[in-house]
Image (cartoon, rainbow, N blue to C red; front, side):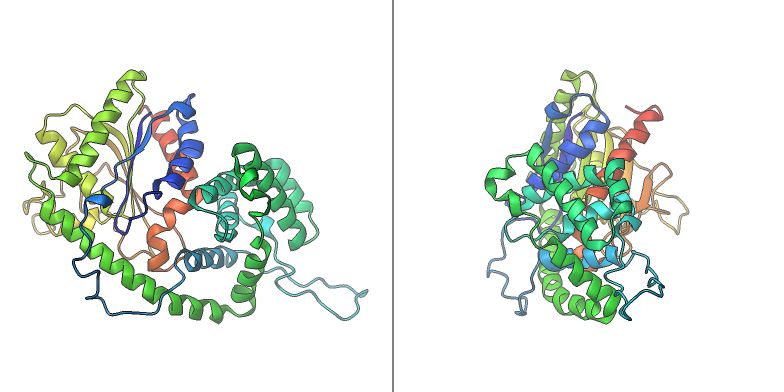
Length: 409
């Protein structure tokens, strides 16, 4: 089961693929193959093909620097904490007159497995934890929260602090078993998790307005950077993608990876080719699957394509794809047909909070699996939030398994 990942805009770190690779290897691959450790999982990187702004981006007015990923994760923590039901204060005639606070009465066992795994992952400080380590923590959290034994312990725990200790101990033990993090300071990788959750509970439960002001104050500079990079990468691709007969360097990167995946598929007995794209990677993939590969008469076929946070629907509305035609529109009453020569199942995933991720409903002919994915985060955080959450990969794995059980590959 070869898996190919194509990133979107705003990607410049060569290590960006490490956490995605880990999630795909440990959560997605095992659901559809008996040999997950030997599945080919590769990235179709194209960020190195985009020239940087000639003047270093000085056309964008300077703003105060935000705190990047940490602020995004605070938003996610707050969004999940907000889903914890408010527990009533205990009534007893044998108290000293003091009552516990809403924070002390919060119960993590009232969250779903997916929300709890995401909460643990987002609550870990990045001070000593890189992207790959965070992914391993997320994978451990996913396993821990789905354990019936851990769930029983959480239900029996006396308070929030006891629940946090149960979770931190279990996650740490799992991480130490799955990787070499022990020798890299992993014994204290959960340091600060309790403080971060307590701070979030305070913002959301005690002073909900504080969370809003924090978000508004920090998102703007990050959004400014994001929009600049987004526009640059989109324009770079659109002006240099080439023609169906003569692909440019960016679509060629994905074509080459898919041809390599086809060879791997045949060598491993016909395991399906899985393609995961993010943001602009979706538009590149659509051009490749509907124009570049068909024009090359390639027999390569993607069995399952997951397009996250893409703008495919919007680009088609604007007739921006090589395969686009004004014959298909609301005015003509004809939806856009999807060329299936090189594509089987297409799962389009978007977030209502991410204003640059788009649905395909009503635009393309039937046959696209189009769903929303809740994040509860702002634009700057929501657009990249999919790929850092264990719950997304578990949903991805479940979708793959369901498609195969219905007679797919």
